[in-house]
Image (cartoon, rainbow, N blue to C red):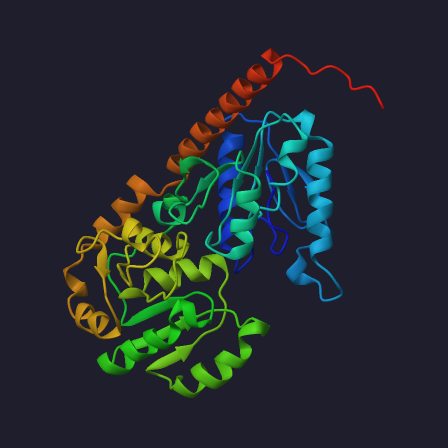
Length: 357
């Protein structure tokens, strides 16, 4: 299991991909699989841990080129590839050029959008690659490649306390960038008069946007910025909200905060972009809204949503066991494909040696 190195596994605060990798690894170990996790040295896991770097890259400000550790990671993984039955990389598509160097099947899962030029270049260059996608929406962005199917992210629902009664605010959780829609969330609060609490980390590359676009609109007690929360704080924060506002303006591959909120009983108001229509059953666990004004109107109807139904929906569709069932099926498929490919290659006549002229 190859994890991104930017955050530890599991992350203390921000780090959706690393959190999903943690859930996946722990359940695979619980099921009896022998798992080796290649991750940052400060990670905690029940698997065998290979410490690629001393600490997560976001904890170190002394690095001139953090990508060097990702190359080191892939070198370590594929140097010992024959020790494994399967390699699963969650580092976008950085493993694709290495996969043809071994007969061990390699599965790649990107937790980012797939319609970028660099993703297209890699997938097109390695059309025999085996890939899983986090949603049907993300899968539609694949220009080529051998897709093993949709493997929705899962969370440990039982670890999320259920909150039957909502508080008096709406929540926003996510990066403070335009595609996440924080300005739209602020607009909803301003129009409804319902308090909005924003929980997020200010990344340096987003600081200018925060200072120029968001900070002038933050006016407590109507609109509050409460900063980044750890995992337990975030779950309580989501559970006490009337609703999670998720006004994304980009094709989000999944949206972990959506299922986390619903696991606590909190319904979701979201724009139907990316995977959102697959995560939110409109009218049952929240509302799909066309724009901020539609979100304003739907917020007045949020009490119609049964908070028990929100939690049940996640338990049925986005639990850790459900996620791992899907990944195990993908692993079996990848191993079968590799075996058939090896059998086909061995049956072909080998070309004779060429004589030098």
